[in-house]
Image 1 (cartoon, rainbow, N blue to C red):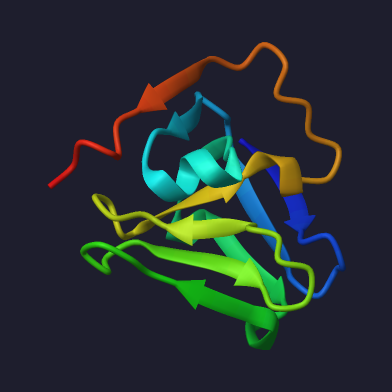
Image 2: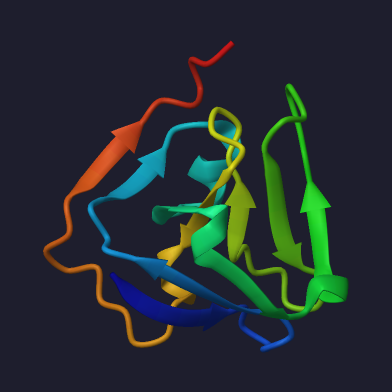
Length: 115
């Protein structure tokens, strides 16, 4: 397991995760397609929000189960709470400092076809 820190573009939102990066995921739902997200799934116990809770805006749609978070200042999507597994977060790996996704398998998930 490795620890990584990450954040939004302007630095208002800062977080830390711990993961072994077993895989990365993409999703074909309407929001993930538009934000071109590449994510790693981490349990909430492996996630720590270091700064910026007040800087986060939340967006929900469809079933209003998944919780997508964005920085109110710069608009960057750093993470979301997952719909099917709400005790996990999807972390935008492009918000992680010093992380290179090269060589990690990418699994395409189906979000558009979910009820």
